[in-house]
Length: 518
Image (tube, rainbow, N blue to C red; front, top):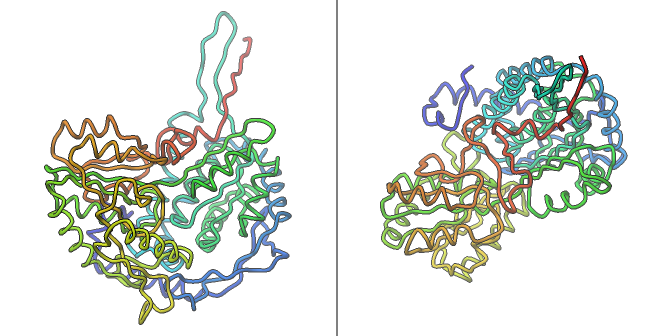
């Protein structure tokens, strides 16, 4: 089967849709079952019972029931990972790479079913879902490639006489992987594979809104032959499972993607007694700048896709827009018209652009952001929560564009994680950059300009880990493994080494210098 990327989505035709429709039917046949935890390769039930995983487009549909894991369950998962660690480390990187490549091949075979499930569980449209599966495959292959290119991260050092020394990067042990809902396959798998290929074992906790996609990742690892206990799957609340993963001294490393508040809490608490690696990828309040020389058609398309794709529920979503006064009105007219043309609806439908938000709390956040926008500025387009007809049983909202905002408005500072775009007029690139750099986040940023000097100034000055110019496919979004490294500065990330990039896997290892006398 061909791999589908964000760049190739526009070329998908009837064959893609027919295959996707068939996958929907197959996935629907397996809905409603109760699923266990998997600890040490064995299915386990939690004493706390189960919770329902429902479809955000129609909450009457229960996708499945999943275990409310406890602290005791998390302790067992950590112990299983600890027991499996020595053999997994000793296996050697070549065999680990071979097993993980088998997992990637299985994912390609199952890509349409995985994508259909994500559309049901997260609300991504079918194009976003299938592209995420392909991105996940490339994440696995790219991280395996890093081990190969570095020969397992062994490197000879200097020596004298009969003394021979080499540097070896070695795994830490057991890693906790706590993933978000918005990229439930790519981020979960990418974080896990980074740890696994390096020789660590994993306790994986998916977001409670997306346990089903997390289960499919476990099954993929199991079916590829990853040994029991190397990859453990545990669902449950952050207040039990999450707390145990933070507090338990048997966890040697922690990786998390999610909000800044939660990430900072983990960073402060995880290394209680001695330093331990903790990788936290957190939020963003990502700016785009539109200058007078910009191709306004490209700029409007790029901003729209970044601001409203997946309902703005991306840490990379464009949520701030700084438009030069000379093109402000022409640009906004074009942006509003393009936004009006996008279809809101069931994400399983082939023509849907914007599906539902993930849950009721997200809808409340959206309503709060719109109220603040009306208080501080003007809602130029959208702003309604959709409740009737086909929207009656889901979490649907309109994309919202808010302008005439004072630059000090909280609309430009707070991450809402919903499809609300805040707009300010600027008189110069200097002013735009000053505003873009003002704030606690530094994840992604983009500019639209045909002036080479302005582009150089943007890249030299912007405080963000992922930067783009003139990107019609997404002003601030759309990173791909081995193409764009993805990681944040300031309050957006803790490690300074980005996912999807060439320095990622090494973070899951520590250096040992080995000297021998020949």
